Image 1 (cartoon, rainbow, N blue to C red):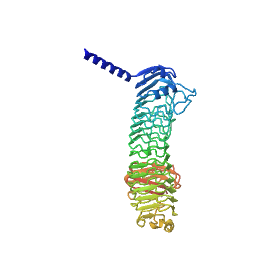
Image 2: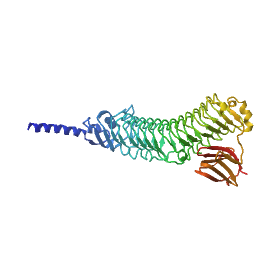
Image 3: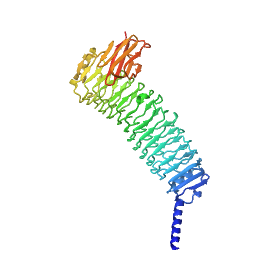
Image 4: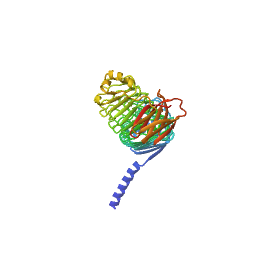
Length: 498
């Protein structure tokens, strides 16, 4: 009999403990939550009815054991009675969570009000135990650093209703593995560093409606190896440091036919093996592909006018031939330093910056069309065995290069072709038959670009075959700059159509 009483007592204690763990569900009017919740040790709270900042303050300050908060059936009302809450704020809008309202709390699951429109700055920042947050369909704004350092978050799915994501909104979430933004519309505004320093982030799905990847969006996401973003003409720019120090190994630049700008250090430290930029690209910022030590080949846009500082510095696997657009006037400081390219073709260059070709010890040939030796910064060719590097220039430019400091150290040869009726180079042949440009190669022809002498791109063809016949009947001129890229060769000359 005594044993039964002991068991009964233990059962009652356990039941009481379980009841405390069970959800407390209350229906309230604005400002009344403190009177409706009498047990401040509860771990699970579901609120129905109307609440305002007074109730949010009660939840944040008076319920230290709370782990699950369900506000899906609650609506947040405006409040401005002069009292200060949450870092001294005195005015609170309807359908919005105030700034810093749940800063550093130990919540594990949060279901937000169904009519909620705005999550304020830092609202859940430092909630390191937060595993799940359910965003409502009405949500339009996610504030700056609102979920910064929510280390237990694993997945984030942002609804189509969101029109603004603030600076660093999900930055430094150490456990975050995936982020899905595919539903977002073209109206959504993205601020900088949204997912920066999320070290475990492996996959991100971006909206095909994005016109820009903002600065630092995935900076230092060291595990990020997959980014889904369908190629289209919508994407116009990739911001500075957008993908710096990620684990990306490829990015289909060529599919983004409207891409114009790649920002400073945007892909520094990634490990692409090949980069083919679309002809729409007008600007590639400083250090954009800095120390991409897996990069073996790059096709630069013919519409670039400048090669920026450090843009390919440290790309030690970059070998073979590199073609610099006929429109490029300036090559920046350290632009090609520490690469292993064996030859480079340069059009109408006017200036090369300090140590632009530093330690290019594999470089055996430079071809440059400029008749006057371009001006140079300091030690442009530092570390190179210049007397054993062939410098191909046009015949009328030989004297200029032989008289110019730094240039004169090369083995200068004045036999660069400036006008040809037929290209026959290595295993590539190109010639006109009437108004058709014929290209034949023993290797797959990857690219044929045709420019006017002034640099305007007329035709960009990707034959992906060993021969191509390109219709030039709509072109009125007779002189063209033709660039042909096969699997292992690159040739650019001026070609005359008779």
